[in-house]
Length: 83
Image (cartoon, rainbow, N blue to C red):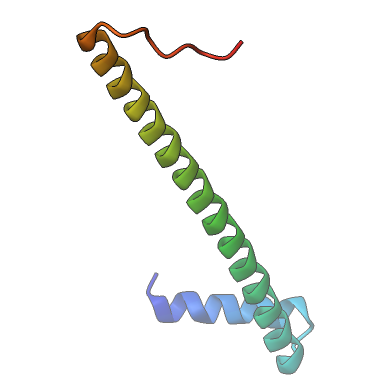
């Protein structure tokens, strides 16, 4: 299917859903678009937070590992985990 035929099929489906009322079909299509856009934005923000948290946690683990290596090399006591 081409993009034009996809658009026509979608428009026809909206028209059919509202009984042929073009204004109602447009209203429904725009409403669906806004809902979909809002959901996509919410998912994108959640993904950004997840990636940021993972990056920060990874960086903290790398830094702690370097500190422990330096302490081992210099003979100092290791960093103790809180219990």
